[in-house]
Length: 415
Image 1: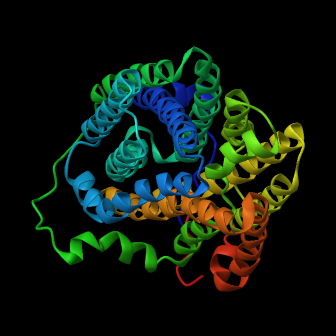
Image 2: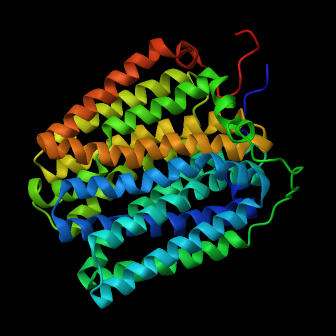
């Protein structure tokens, strides 16, 4: 049996990994910029159209190109320098923020522009996600990977908290200010990513064929615990996510303004940040499969509470707890995927994982917007939360190897 990565290295040892810390800072700035941009685009779209359907379309327009390009993006990430790919993706997102800033300042904003730029964001993130995820194993020793994943998630969640909260506050100074600050953060993240250095050996030239593009799909399919983990996240967040409806909850149900929307967007990240800090200090070492499934069920229950709540503070608590539960899911899933994947395959496997994540997030936004248009926002959120709980319970039987998984490392062959 392969020894389980233990937390024998301290947090101080992790901080001495300079390349990893540079990537961590780039992700912090880039994620904060992305979150500010998404809050601004959502509020901008709802201010222009007042339509739940259009809020859902923003998510769909980001998901569609990400889905179409994901397998090719994974192939590219496995061939070229991942730090430079990440830097290029951040530069394009900065250009999108600049375009929105110019359109808002010049009075040229429109529903079509917002949807068109959402397509650009989706295409870029098809490359960004596998490049970003597959960089960490190259920058830290394998024994530090679970701790590094948790610390990366802590930084990302801090940015997810700060980005929307700062974006909500900056709305006081105008939407142009939000777009301008996000542009500055994208530039910073781009520079930090471009400075990343690691031993990169270009692989032998390989033709782009169906077999090479689908290698990541085949790899995940043959490893049932990994397939169970990534598909669990897909269905749970696809059903239970309610991010697209937060502008409606902020304005029409909880009766707050842009500042309230910022806090609602930040609340899941606040819970996730607290949990990721805990997991950085005390990584999950035993019963990882069962812990993963229970965490997803708790996430669904929290979304039911949020959907039924008419209290702003209760809604914040429910969202924070949902974020904490989801962070357990994120850290276990990402660590399992990275530990079981050889470096030559990490881009393609991360791309497939990105399809699942994109489907759960962007397609989940479309699902929630579409069902809210049919049955109202409360019905949409409650139904989705119940669905997430049922998925977690079903996965105990559908993926018994995942439910029985005790440690992050692979069990003995034949187990």
